[in-house]
Image 1: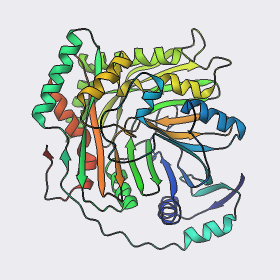
Image 2 (image 1 turned 60 degrees about the vertical axis):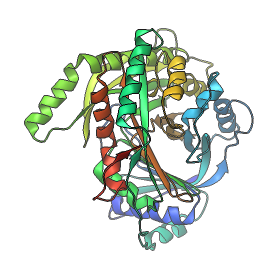
Image 3 (image 1 turned 90 degrees about the vertical axis):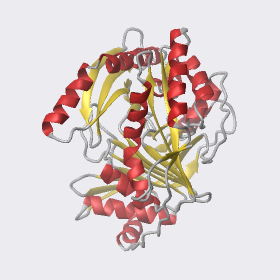
Image 4 (image 1 turned 30 degrees about the horizontal axis):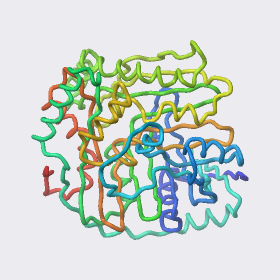
Length: 433
């Protein structure tokens, strides 16, 4: 790919206009955004990928190996995602719930255009086409917002059923089946018409996050506000940053600091976080050099617009002779969204949850031409299928034996708040069914 640089007066405005133009002209669009948030080991770049110059085929065999082979044959910039249900390729597992959204289990493409925009307004464009024509099309693009039709948000699980399932998980833990399980519930709205870019923009304003993503794949969209990194490779260094531990923001500086301290000192949240850190250490050890796995930060507290989160950082050095794709494969799905031990946790997730996870709790990201990569965890993300007018998002929490079912339900509602606020009419409230 050739690269061209130019300057624009307003980086944010230009980039949003580029996204609007891209979604009207192309079937595949991927957007990554840091929202100006500092994050250890850096957040996502501010990057827009437009069009599918080449789509990776996953028709045969192991999807992770297929991605590696496609990249090795033509070392290009690839963007895409791994859906949660790829777990069924990795272990003797299945997914019994219907697929209501229709995203492929995995999708990766080499974009026609890759556009980076820095805060100072310097735009760098990679592509083989006429950059001047591309810039002119974006600069001259005018848009009319799509008239939206909103609907009341429903929950796939009633509060009573949720509380009962948490008690069942506690019993499984007591019996030694698992130590911790990430239990999730789906919120959804039917017969909705959304303007995906406007909806994503509203979500970004409401909940700016360091691993924010927008995906268009034909008539399917994902609008994401993820705070969590799944796995990053830089050179031979692997970095995973699991999140376990959430508390709301305070209404005053004093309350906010009190809640932050409460999260930091919570024995329950620290126990949950430590269990997942141990799981991540084991996952990275499968691809890392012996003795290279280390916990760089334990129980770090980071503050976002809606919540405080407890984040730990685990790193390793990729073992010589191990493919970069195997590092992803050995850690997928991420422990923060499954539980421990991982395989039994995934079996119980399918038994207890009422929806197929699909793209939720998968990973979205990119692979560079030299084989580095960065992937988030697909959480706090709204999925929308325009053809069926179905919108869906899921939230969850880690259940340990000490879990209070009512508090876990409240945590789910807290995590759902940002998307609910933009998805449903102001006069409606969530119903549970």
